[in-house]
Length: 253
Image 1 (cartoon, one colour):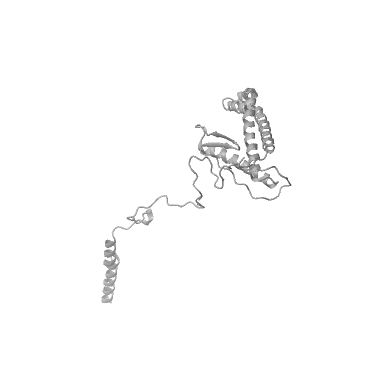
Image 2: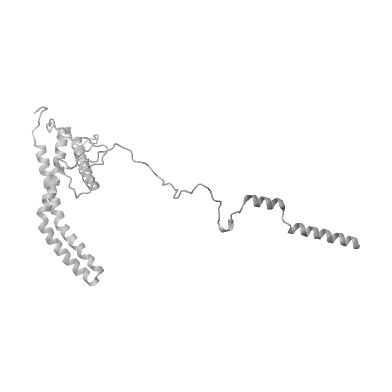
């Protein structure tokens, strides 16, 4: 009985020593691998390659491909055509109701020019390039739309180009003339609008004083815009009459 207890105690002692004694294989493995990252602190194994950041790619990328337009040409229209040569002018012919026709391509402006139909001026230095392109593109597309409509009612290409060019050019000249003629009225409207803005915004000063320039601009526009629009209509009408009544010209004349 005594020997049995002694044997049991020795076995328990040996097991206890095995529990607290580290495993030599595990110790060697951990020492060979070096310090391990602490996953609880968020440490990650470091790599020799630096991480490129930011690395996300933008979606829906479609590079715009097209013909390269010269830097001195103030236009972004890829499908534009060169200036017509005007070698002849066809008679007016017999007109009819509109029918479907192919759209007329817009006309590209000459280098360094602002082109509004048959009116061409040098682009001023103070005008931003993008703004100049927007003006040219808008005028060219309006001219092309007018020419397409004239084609649909039976006009020949030379006459259609002549009429559409003079309509757009006359409208621009009319706008400029109307704006000049309306400048005294615009000044009066600006003064009255500024006074009204002051009367409205003064009780809420200083924030309410923002109504002063708003009222002045509104008053000036209220007087000038209608007169400029009337000028545009008159100019376009005169241009159309002049182009429609122009006598035909054969090739070589």
